[in-house]
Image 1 (tube, rainbow, N blue to C red):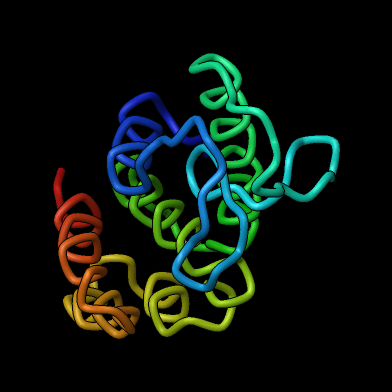
Image 2 (image 1 turned 180 degrees about the vertical axis):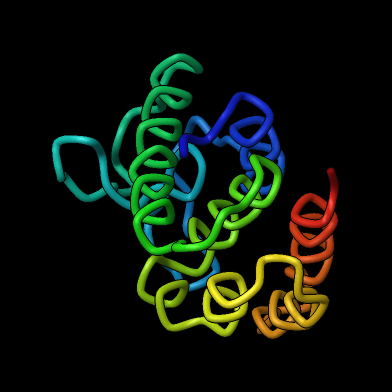
Length: 144
């Protein structure tokens, strides 16, 4: 599966899109949609010039599509587009390693309609600011 336009827009709303470098919650230089590296592999620094809107969207969408490919590989059950988009959003935020080891993935691969998936998403709320995001992802996951 691929991340569709709805999935890209939802991810952009959840992540935010910043044109200038900023420090993330861990103090790591970041740009666009939480990107810590550019497509050429160069790390983001606080001295980098701002991106144009087009550059930021290209970077973010390319990285999101990389995550989508990895999620598609890891999910072995049949899921719908909304479920896939929500899983990519989660993986983008927690990292592919976290997603690979997550209860969410285990439950989805066992039964993608298991209501316990809702609680499994909510396990990924270290910061209170993530509660709204997880609720949004869960609602997307369980929407038809």
